[in-house]
Length: 485
Image (cartoon, rainbow, N blue to C red):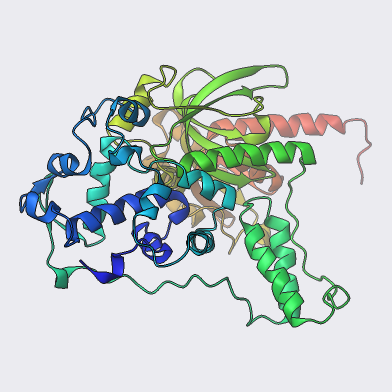
């Protein structure tokens, strides 16, 4: 067996977790244990397993005979039905580590895990008391696939694997567990970075560890840091105007969601949500990722949305009406059948799916209708406020001559002629921009409003009509003022 992985050091686990130890601690421990059994000279696996082995054959060596083999049971049901308490599914992380031959103390091991992962100590304690092998069979199958990707196994055919020779095994990289160092920064630079981090720490509470290190550097390198603090000259203003009480509640929701992501195999959350100031509904969703956008934190999730449909939705965390999110295990009858099927087949949505949709059109509400946008600006205005700015990868300038062909290609037939007629009335010397937008996305709409009265929406017609009505209403608000000559 490779001496490099004989012991589950924090560095080895960090490597086996693909650098995401905060979310994959249990997976990394499973990977390490499986590798020690496959390549350890003191084990019988290498002799008992066929040269080309399957997951089922490995599973039977890994677990006790009483361990359920059903693919339909969730992790809790599997462990409950396993009556052999010597089975590895009953062993916690701590129990596995205690027999692993660690060459460092448990305290030092935990300290290095905290430094590598950024996870908070209370959460690490919770993780260590859980059972990494008390998981569904799909997770173990994925472990074999991931070990193959890491270069520890060779895939022979669909579902068949082979161990490698010692000289073929990968060599773990050197990973430092030293505290983040900012010694190359001057004291004024350190102060400025500290101010910036303080401004955005509400987005990710784990930044507190970095801020603490910055404070320590200031203390270590300045005899009187509080009196020598330079005048702050760069300010970062973010609109996050929640009360302290509401912000604490939002942070609690975020922490619950992040904890759920750290657990295998995850689950579904259920909560009451304010649709309007007077109306709240219950939603049951699979949480995919969190965003901060325009003064609020959002949860992008898939499941039963506020309209009772199985769909995507972005939920503002400060509009959640429940005191605490209700976490549902995959076996819970309240989990929608469609979500269960996606989980069972390994087809649950991912953050990459959301990013792909965000890339296709301008607008945070990525699940809304996608439509073709045409904007006209006076040339001087476009030069000052639009040119050389980034709104979305699909948003760019075009010439007047290019527009008829683009309209034919991208506008629905029912609107094509109307938009072509509007375009004929415009000057070829004006500036024109096109892009793809999510119709109904408030963030896009607010940007189009900001460009008024210089930015004219030619398409989509629905937004053109909406902005026209808003302009008429706005003008009526000033109807009592005399005209200025």
